[in-house]
Image (cartoon, rainbow, N blue to C red):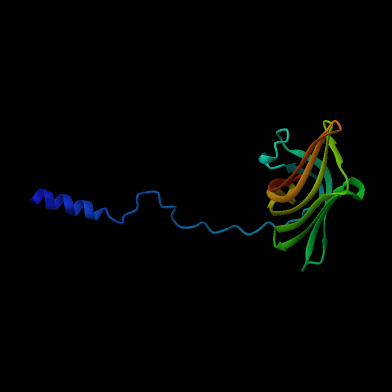
Length: 169
């Protein structure tokens, strides 16, 4: 009987104890990166997997600059020389957080025989890149991506699951 009582006490003592899978205290979030997002970048577009486009990401060389007031900064990016056939116009909705449009006026050539047409709204968070500049490493994009290769239309895909990034050159 003593053994049964001892076994019961040991079993009950384990109730409510941490099994070792508890995540522990939450980490303090790091402050958003608020350095400049200016200069030469690659705008990388990754269509949603459900689109069925040829695997991979597609990139375009853009020039970015921050404009607007300190109270309401914006990020604008175009093809080199201010060519607005591709335009990214985003507001900083809070420090380091972007939301706005990523679009083309017509299909643009992006290399390897591909052309890309965009009508999207994107959101993203700015991170620190080398050289003190900002970058967007992996962000969401919702809307239309149209892709063609060697003048053959591969289709238009409308999805809330497209991805984008802005990588310094």
